[in-house]
Length: 184
Image (cartoon, rainbow, N blue to C red; front, side, top):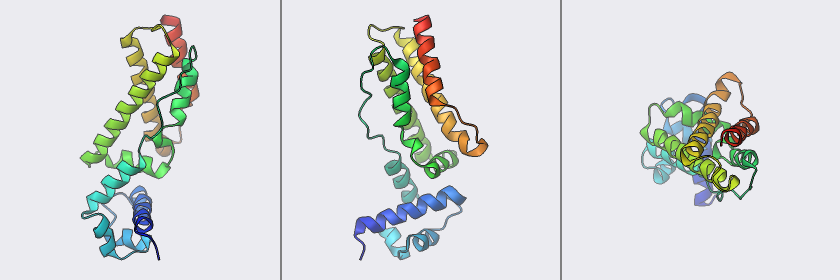
């Protein structure tokens, strides 16, 4: 017999698969239960409303749990590259589809993307501050570089599955670091 956490995880796994495939609105709760192999009532035991499945899925599967970047004095490109590889959005293509598909119609998903963007900017700015001791570039320049880096990463995540076009985060990190060094 499954533990309660196993059943809950299977429900979220099924919801991730189905929401990524056909979207939240097109997925009935009964289908989530069937794919998860649980009674429909168990879905409602863990998630009183269908929207609670989406909110839990997005909140739990896009956590940023890593520590802040380690110092990389003098190597801003390496610091940004390491940060890009540790982002939660790179872990699951289906979660990327869910985030960017549902953001227009579900406030909680839009808020989560906003929070992720803010967190990426904060971490990128911190990584740059550590990599560029003495403040090579003023605070506004570091903020702009961090925000640009976050925008490129989120852009990449939102269109890669649609177009197949990818942007190499290492190249972007190197470009940002070179610009900061050259104009700092």
